[in-house]
Amino acid sequence: MTDSNVWQQTYTPIADNLWISGFVALLPILLFLSCLVWFKVKGWIAAVLTVLLSAIIATAVYGMPIQMVFLSFVQGFLQGLWPIAWIIICAIFLYKISVKTGYFEILKQSVIAVTPDQRLQVILIAFCFGAFLEGAIGFGGPVAITAALLVGLGLRPLYAAGLCMIANTAPVAFGAVGVPITALGNAVGVNADLIAGMVGRMLPPLTMFVPFFIVFLMSGFRGVKETFPAVFVAAFSFCIVQYWSSNHIGPELPDIISAIVSIACTSIFLKFWQPKNIFVIEGESSGANVATTQTQHSLNTVILAWMPFILLVIAIIVWQIPQFQSLFQKDGIFAFTSMSFEMSGLHNMVMEVSPIVKENHHLSAVWKFPIVLNAGTAILVAAILSIFVLRAKASMVVESAKETIKEMFIPVITIGLVVAFAFISKNSGQAATMGLALSHTGALFPLFSPFIGWIGVFLTGSDTSANLLFGPLQQVTARTLEMPEVLFLAANTVGGVVGKMISPQSIAIACAAVGLVGRESELFRFTLKYSIGFIIFIGIWTMIIVHLFPGIILHT
Image (cartoon, rainbow, N blue to C red; front, side, top):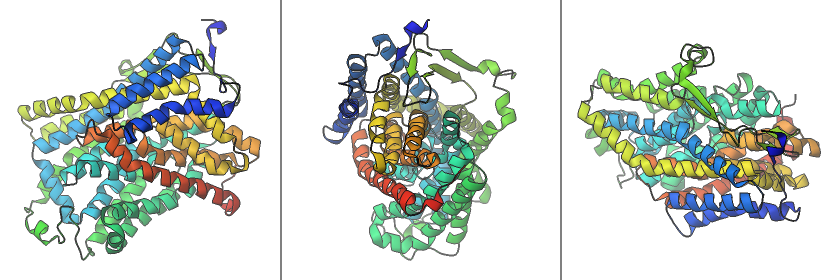
């Protein structure tokens, strides 16, 4: 197609007024919030209404050709199916294999053997193990797996999902082997190691706070006091390693290294110390009865029970090895398994313009379909190997597959719809309008900079996508205000991590994992107030860094 066919974004479509345009662009989000918070409709219905309103605004207000709006919907929906929904489907299938074979019960007892206190079990699984999974696979897999584990340990489904989403905030910035930061660095031409170091310097207050906050939600200030030594060991060991690795190694490994160190330190500490009052959610005040009812299993049996998740970790590590990846990339012997499809009529036909980008930029619209080289397939391989290792009967495998498909059908549709909304919002310029409005806050911009990342993750469900969407805007604004750009690039990332817990995509994934399909509004209401509180704190923390502790800021 010729340049005359290229559609150029505009960010002030109404009376050339940024604030009025920003309010109109905000309407789909307000509709989504209203549907879940006040009208309490099912998640997929809220997503349908939100997509429709966003599409109408894209066409009628922003002037985007209707065929491009439709193609943006298709692009987002396909992205929601692959790789996002594929990762969740495989994770749930792996979990069900463990349950059907009976080995999950043994795994559960092995966790209780470390500590019968459910508050500390949640810290070990949701915070520590979840951080490892976030660092390795990201894309919602950690919440799906850890929430399912906690439900198996006896927590109520809504409670388990909410706690896991809160726990998942601390590691999101370095998720999926640091992709949010490496992608941001490439997009804005800033060294990714520098951004990683700045993120590592901004995260400690949040990282230290989250585990204690989880315990507080479970059992109040008294619970924090009772578990303080163990929770401090888990939080402090994670925080120190996260800071050190992000500042001295780079963005790829902080989550994985921090999680391993935190799990090891906490487990060793709990061999010598346990809380006096053991907390069990179903009203138990002592762990004595719990402990005596556990069957004693041999070490080999316990290892066998953990094998699905050990194999999961091994598969993820193998999938990250450059030599393995090269087999499936261009010129590799299995390159034919990594397909991609350009969306004719949309690919390179939408142009981003200043001030979102320094130079006019054509948006790519390529749907990538790597059959093997994605985290979902790594999880599936672990599940298949687990079938043989655990000697699962064919009937168990079939039943697990049927249940997974049945339970995931509506969540997959919901995930596809919310990602479709994200792409319509991004491609039409609605998301950029909202970000620009916040960037015009002048001296108060350090306060609002994290909010831009927060909105970005709410819209897209991904810190990576939010960084790609708003990273250039943060950079341009920083230069205009003559402030260090690395601080605002990091603030976009850190603000985004607490937007994860209210992202429609994450809500749908968490509900699917614990069997709460159709009750997304309940989970959203549970996490919304905490997410708002966290982002206000991060905004204030960014202001404090600028005006009181500028020495924290890294410089090129």
